[in-house]
Image (tube, rainbow, N blue to C red):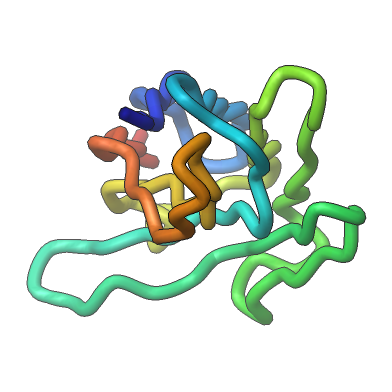
Length: 120
């Protein structure tokens, strides 16, 4: 059994910073791509950033230059450093990972979501 556990969300003022973390645990053989998505009320879930197992990154245009994704392969953990936060960044942020378990089965996993609210 594999699970993703997120932490680091909260309330922050515009211009502030937050760091999200997501750790994968369980019967893991290998973690492939990891990423962050977000979903604001009444909107679809959109990709924010992703990172391959070799460290190649992608950032959505809306967060480029403000957010940075990184990972620690030894800890099976992905991070999202968020700076210069804006009210439009308010959303529930979800961690995603493609994981091969010890039974040689590869599938997508999602975290439970963490709320990020940017407001004065």
